[in-house]
Amino acid sequence: MNSRARRLTIPLTGVLMIAGVIGATTGADAGTAPDDVVSSAASETPAEATSFWSPERMRKATDVTDGLDLGVKGGTAATTTGPDGKAGAVAPTGAGGATSAKGKQVNLPNTVGRIFFTLPGANPLAPASWKYCSGSSIQGKYRNLVATSAHCVYDVKTNQFYDNWVFIPSYWDGDQAWNGKNPYGVYAAKWFNAHDDFVVREDYDYDYAFVNVGSGSKVSWEKGAGGTWKPIVKNVGRLGDNVGGQGFAWNQKVKSAVFSFGYPAGPHPDGDKPFTGRTMKWCYGTTGAMPAAPKYNLQEHIGFKCAFTSGASGGPWLLKYKNSSRTGYLNGVNSVTWDTDKNDRYDKVSSPYFNGDTYRVYKVAANRWTK
Image 1 (tube, rainbow, N blue to C red):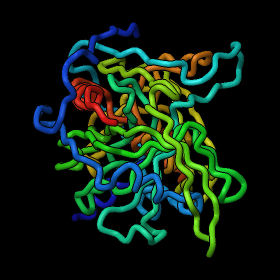
Image 2: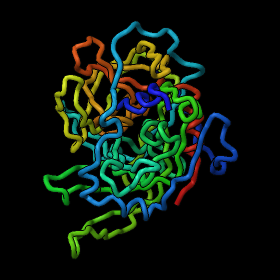
Image 3: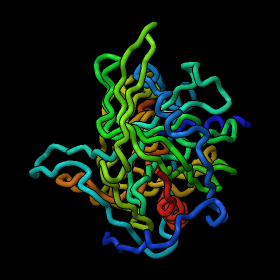
Image 4: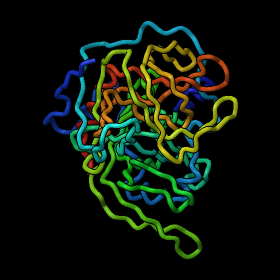
């Protein structure tokens, strides 16, 4: 794998037309998906992946970009970014959290959480293989869908999807290793869905993925003889039934106001590390076209001012976010961090522009059934 490919794994981190995307069709599978959609079954069963992640392993996991070059600098905004067809959207479902009175405080969405996984082809028992990202539950026909960045599901160094992949909405890391919270359960991957241009060409204009998860498990941990952790597991049902699902939007205006959420943890280029990854953080701003970045094969990203660092990778960008219901429309994911004023501090975050290509990947995933 060339050096450019190694760097590519490092990034992070309008009236809506309601379209009938999630219909009564049978679940799409790898055999019926469009040629540019890559779908792959998870390597482990949900029970295996869920039981792998003890509180101690979660605490020791590092962000997937840890130790690698991160982000890009400056440049002139690209002119190729924009819609490739009509705008469309799918409405969110569920409250995604209790309603509340209007106020200046941002109510964090229960749909957002941390993703944990191990590196493929590596010893899963070695701490260096324990990694994490951010993601969000989004609307799907079977309420089993998580949106994140493609580099949070696929390793371009080994050309394989990650192992032991789980999503924990509303994750919170307590003061001690055994206090890690999974208030709505742990949801393990069953199918990964990404665009062929990322999987084959490592093109970060397609750095998005949609993961079908199985039924969730509420896990409590007891420490047994010899200091080993023993999971006590209770089935809690479908992800979307428990936390709701954010909407999905594509071909929206390049200039739009969005909230971004995630679990940043990595340092800025100057070494400062303002985040821990233990709790969810947010940014708010108005998006615009970003410069092309040839080393990422990137020409169609949008971005806005935000000081997120690595660990926030895959966290959602939510258009028309409502503080009362904690829901909005996913129209981006944290993908690449930028130091636009070249002072060794990240000041912008960018996402692939969600267009018709994104919609096609989403549609396959949104109609895939799992149990």
